[in-house]
Length: 383
View 1 (spheres, one colour):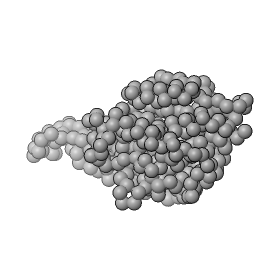
View 2: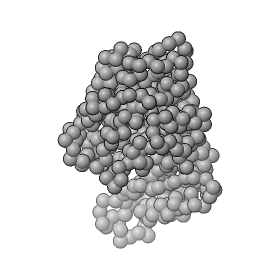
View 3: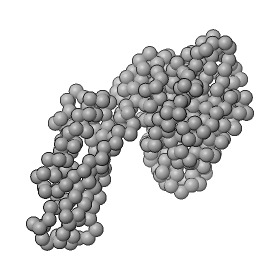
View 4: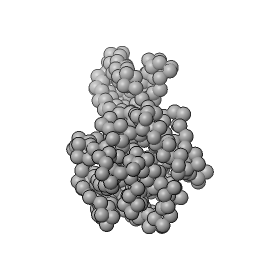
């Protein structure tokens, strides 16, 4: 397989520089400039400012009109890092706690190798995407004509996965990541003295009843054969021990894989809120935001990805089930056939989970990631 060993030390340095200078979604100006500069140095055709701070590198070889897209996300998380590493984040409240610095480095490594070998026939589009963490950078790129300007027969993305052993690759046909919805329910009473609860609808009591009722939706309104999660994550209201607040806000998330299940949950949530409001004498208003759809792999593309992975690692497997986390690569897969892959980076008990303040990308998997990108391009664009 591809000899990329000479690329790894420079890639580690590049990755750690990004780690030390994280940037949040749609503000990846330094990161995008470094990526664009690296692609320009390789002689690629470079396009910037796509979907905000997105960067596209175009590499052509041979005469075929076939095209494949390879995507890496660039943004950091609004978390305070606690690793204590020499290259720890220099920006308070910003942290590459999901490994996007590693994703960028791996894709740049693949661009470097493919640019020097050109053992393919067609065009590779290297897609460096902003704002994956909840802000929909992939959607912004698609809406700005990503696949019209840079057409692809297939598009692929990989994400490091601490739950899998380092170097293992897994994917599956169909759903691989969940749709992500956010809800907020505003519970309104009138407010009043805590010693006189009979004089005012109690928004806190109503909110408490509401939380209990919400947690029955998946268990009692969704088929046991379907998969879904509803979690209440915030309850905010009140400011004094002797005052019944006029308003309480209940916030949470819903994860699912099927649009019909998603519809059923949203409808049930609104019905539950209405019923509790009537019973408690409060008023309730529901805001429901379906911000990321489910990530659905094309079956043929998933098979192609596993075949490519089988050439670069000892363990390329079909994932037995999808994850309930979400991913805005879903928007790209709605516009172009492709697949999303997990690249194991687990290192036993030393591995912190994604989005944890002690997380760090495992540099030992950089070579596997580079080879996987290269294999995908060379197999899909075989001469």
